[in-house]
Image 1 (tube, rainbow, N blue to C red):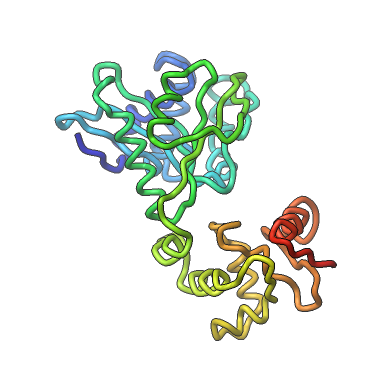
Image 2: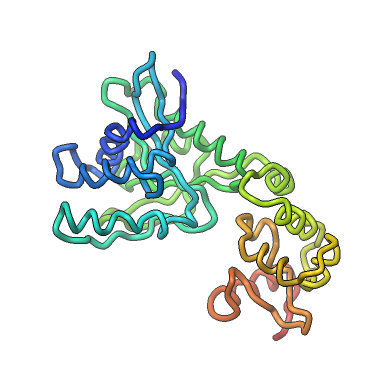
Length: 281
């Protein structure tokens, strides 16, 4: 068995696998929706987000995965297609969010089940995600599918909560990277050289310590506190790279996740409090 990246010609298999994952047959009207999305460069089910497992040269299964933070962006193309093929746009809950690499759909053709194809796909997708710097790989599994949950548990996934998806109660499960955060920052291909400098300097701070945007800029030889702020806004490693420790020059909290008020700032305040340091606006 080998695992390879999917190509556009794999779209029929991808669509079939996604149908299986959500409980539909290829005769269902939703199949053309998934087929169209699988052929596209940017979509939730794009072939670019898929790994294929081959058994003796035959595509036997597939897994779809992507950055959970991109869910809303990647999902946008599905809505007009649902309207066209189904005549309606059903409510679809968010099954993932920022903070994990999400394994969206996994399927193995019936004649290849019991051969370890699914486990091999999960392991390879997880390995690639961890090598790219992701700290967690996540998935959801139906309460009423204990066999699948046992497989995921055997591969290191643990329950972290629950979600509702398409009318089903699902366990949200995750597994964590074996790499420490400094290794992830040093090796991630997802960030720029400047971001890497900022994040590594920030990792030299300690719990209970804060630093201003300007001071962090000076530590890396940069004249722009604003540029540092932009790098922190794009931080894919939060809170492991502790951008919550960076505050404004006037002692205020500054921003967090690109926002200066609301739940994000309260989360920043909470993280600082948990580190036994509370800063006042």
